[in-house]
Structures are given as C-alpha cells and as structure tokens.
Length: 158
Image (tube, rainbow, N blue to C red; front, side):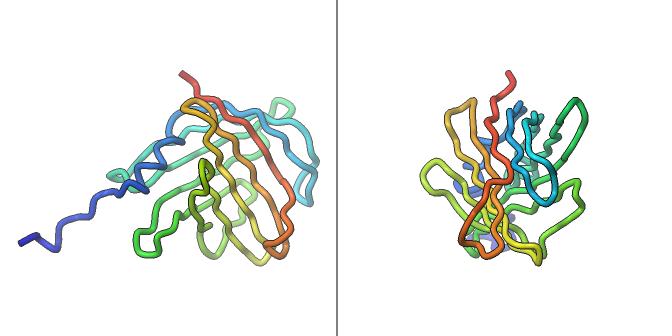
C-alpha cells in the first residue's frame, strides 16, 4: 500500500515550463502607456527550475537609454488541483495583483491572464524553438480588447 504522506512529484505540466529555463537576451518594444513613453529596450532574463521541479523562477532587468528601467520577478507553476498554470508576478513598479495570473497552453503559447483594480494584464509566451521565444504583455480595462504594452524576442545565451 502506498504511503499517502509521500511528497508529490512534478507532473509533465510542471516539466513543460523548463522550455523557458536558462539565460536570455531580449530585444523589446515598449508601447506608450500611462506608465511610460514608448520606445526600444533590451532585457536580460534568467530563469531556473526550482523547488523540486514544481516552479520556474524568472528574473528580468530591462534597460532603456543605457539605464535600468524596469525589473520583474515571476514565479510560474502548474496548479494540479485547478488544472491551470499560475504566474505570480512582481515588478519594479511596486504593484501586485490580488491573485496570480492563470491560464494554459494554446499550441506553442503559454497564455496567462491576471486582473487587478487597475485592469487586466495578459502575458503570452510563445515558444519559437529551443533557443528563441516571443513574449508580449497586453493590457485591457475589461479583459476583452487587448492593447500591447510590451513585446519582445528573447534569444538563449549559450
């Protein structure tokens, strides 16, 4: 008889997040918004699988005009009870949502949506190949009409 107190093991859904693990350089476009003026940016992203394989922990630093302009800390996981991916997002603007972003895979894209009193954000991470992914963050006041806030192409550093 199996010991019901045995620790769970990561599922294939957890392992699927490993596609984003590694060190990446990104070329980004920041769109004009109520938070910032638009323009080009670069980002350095580091991500690792952690805590027995249940989480992808991602940190990024964005630079514009030679200075750090934005930083993020994201924790991705798969919620086996709700059968949904989760993203706990923190950034240098100091805002945090009341709950994590939630979503799943649609083809080669991991799509996660989160809401707050300021509106809704959608994160789309599209796997191009083993060494490239695209990402966009979009905003919507009503979670229906989405406007790009940030788009980027990220290439693995070898």
